[in-house]
Image 1 (cartoon, rainbow, N blue to C red):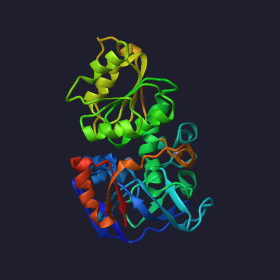
Image 2: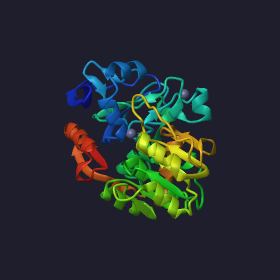
Image 3: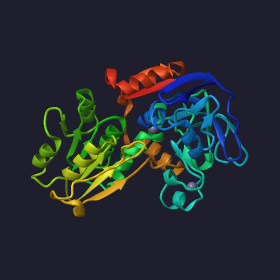
Length: 353
Ligand SMILES: [Zn+2]
Ligand SMILES: [Zn+2]
């Protein structure tokens, strides 16, 4: 089969490799759509294959790291012990797969698995393997498109998770720092959850246009005005209830800490890269002691996926405008270049074999 692999940092290519076969508890999915994500850029540019291969068993072949963790397709083959899925089922799986049995899977969610869970590598290929299939995959209802299912595997779960874990409820004021694909999902999630004032911050005007479409009341371009000052003036000087950090930089993290009210929450879902070192100001008000910081990766597992699919199918959550580009699997290296450049208004790229 054809697959996109990373032979070395900064380089991806399409190669022919054997179609994977399912081991016990695993299933093989024939890809109908995959996409490129911000986390892929970290795997591509920062993390050496040796490190990833040691961390995530089976992710690195002699040809390179299997790329892509967001996919949807139909079941091609199931391994021994898989009971919830059959050949031909239309399925998706969370981008992080957990064992479903460890304490962390059972008490938090599959994204923090300590029983052999990992990133679902290999979706940018004709076929990909889902480990622990019964507890990480879900049937995609007929009423849910490939595009929406693929968003649910990662960025929709992450963006909505930022709102849930930040505990932003009915009428809450929320500020989103960065409106890339994950930040835009957080904006849509805040609106879906019944938040009140939703403020979106980003330096790209086309992204701010999308923020308004997804429910933001106010948009701020930091090239034009100071976002923290503006947020303070919009909230009578107190700050917002929740600030969402959705890109993974010190500057946006620090802005979040300054933009929340006393007792407010910084809900961080940005990926900070290889060696995150974050500081927050301690002498300004509200101080260090008055803030809560929560971090979330991507809430994962079958139950989470099923509830997001139900939300999409029944609650009218429609994020199709995020798909700005379409490419074939063979064009995946080009998709990485485009995604990295942020040119052409790119947000999500639908990749089909
Ligand atoms: Zn992702
Ligand atoms: Zn686990």
